[in-house]
Image (cartoon, rainbow, N blue to C red; front, side):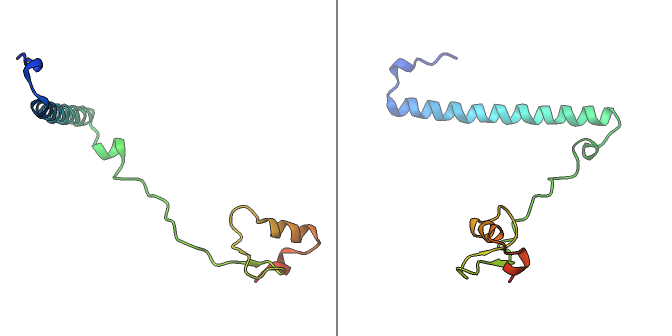
Amino acid sequence: MAVDIKNLNHNQLNELISKAQLRQNELRKEKVAKLREKIHALIKAEGYAFEDIFGTGRAKTRRSGGTVAPKYRNPADPEQTWSGRGKRPRWFNDALKAGKKEKDLAI
């Protein structure tokens, strides 16, 4: 099937391209489905279940639980707080160097 693209106008070319892309996606999906069937057949032939090889579903993802209540407060500026997680803020390190203890900065 040879298509003479030199005789096609802009709209006809765009239509041909979109049809070709749709067909390409269909062929890819068919190929993936056949490959999936082959893999399932191979796993079954070896005496295993799909779940034995690949597990049962997705791995548990980490929950982002939101903000954590602050544990420490800067005595020089009470609006500056730190939850005790992550990198220590500069004011916290400066207070420790000045002789304060962690329990002195606790809320």
